[in-house]
Length: 302
Length: 226
Image (cartoon, rainbow over all chains, first blue to last red):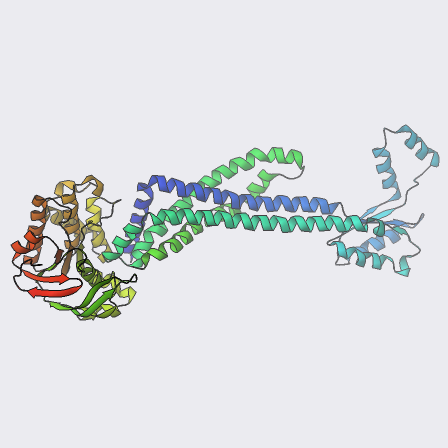
């Protein structure tokens, strides 16, 4: 058994090393596929980041009546955090609202003077609430509309923001679906191109396969070297892809970070290095092996 | 050893290659299959190599019915046969040495056996200087000698030679026929398909003559008569 495996490996390596043109073509096509699959992995991360960034902008605000004790607001905040639909609750006191307002309009003396004339904060304390899904906001609003909170709450701005929230969530859902559809379609195209390249390479060797069969080689003895050849091509392609992909991630990382602060592709690449290696090796080797198995099957029926 | 019983072969396109062919071949025989091109000689050999299956009838090799053989049993049968083809059918990306060693590797011979036997066989066919050459670097006669060396290396029970001299000049033709006779003297059954009158007449061996897929003559020490 060991002798047969050794011979199959030797024949596979000979096939790979002697037909360098075909080996280079096969590796090149697998590299393209691996790079595409790896890019889709990164693309999913980037789109997830963008979706989260957009969704962060969707929230509702609860304004409290003037002179509502802070303790009661904090109690309500705690109760809100217990609702499963609520993703995040942030309390902003009257003073903090005022501070933010002054900071934002520090270059506008008319507004600053008006505030100073009023004396104290003319603003209301706010709870900003975020839910996981657009349709979950209604549950939160129903909770806030309970009579217990009637004497605390001045206004909930859900109904004014509802169309925007629904549009944001609709958009991000669309982005997710489009991202997945594009990824799946591109992956299928890449796999088909690789499969056809390997199929053509094996088609060129159909006479050799026939001869091997006629002189008494078993199907596994014929198939084995092609699988070894496919594995070697996939392995080399994965290594080349890793080098190219590392360079690309490093190169575009700063440019992307400039466009989207907090999105660092290079850090993501480093953090997910082992996953990426696994994706690249398994894509390369499995593509090489599976394509070879399917392509050679036809020629073994002699 | 080999027995064709009422074998008929009709190809899917309707061409009838063999029609009710029956004969037997004993161990250590040298049998020539004579006939014009298209008489069914190649089909007869392809059936023995199970490259094709008969439409009707049965073929026995070592008491094994080849018409009913399962695909996983095929390699075992083919390893008992050495085949020499008119177009050589050598593995073009492999050297002379590797082409011959391939059969030994297939049957699971040890590396030592391969290293010992391949040079011996190459010496028999006179190609010991060409071990590192690829088939494309050899002449037609040399390629055919490689094919014979490959057919011979694993000591098969029978060697099928389908027009082995078809592409060769008279000198190489004579060499190849002498080689086949020598192999036969060493105990291997030879089935030679040819339409070369001179070869058949010079052999003075058994001749089965085919015409339009039928056996029209089967003679010990036969001659080429058509």
